Length: 144
Image 1 (cartoon, helix red, strand yellow):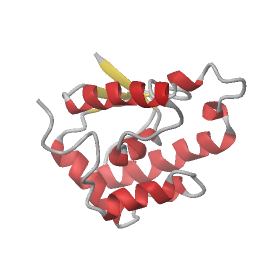
Image 2: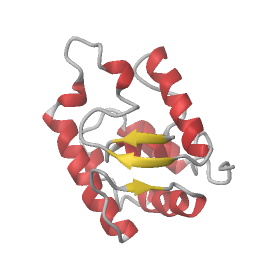
Image 3: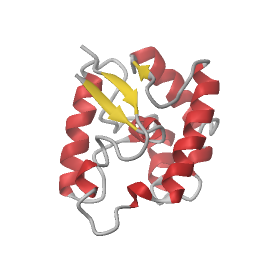
Image 4: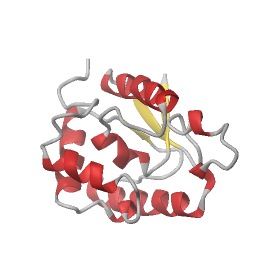
């Protein structure tokens, strides 16, 4: 199987530590984190993805908002530069240990965080990165 992610969620998964919008969101995210940690590849999509799924029943899900689309664009641009490869809709990525470590190092030093500007979760993500990613659910070295 393949995990469907929008571009800015490639940044979010770096610091995911079991916190989220509501219990259904967290349960779903935990499942996705387990799949990625287990070695499933990721395909980039436009718009709502597997992480967004529990929020789509909301009256006005933020998943469709202009700010979220902007975050996707900015994340794709910075990650493409960092990874020296296309990060665009339809591209497949394997988030192996080396890739996660490389992305997390860049995230911690702020090199790929342009998409995080204005995000309510940014302080939590900064704290997790500052603590060396000790709490994350997708830890380097967990892939099977």
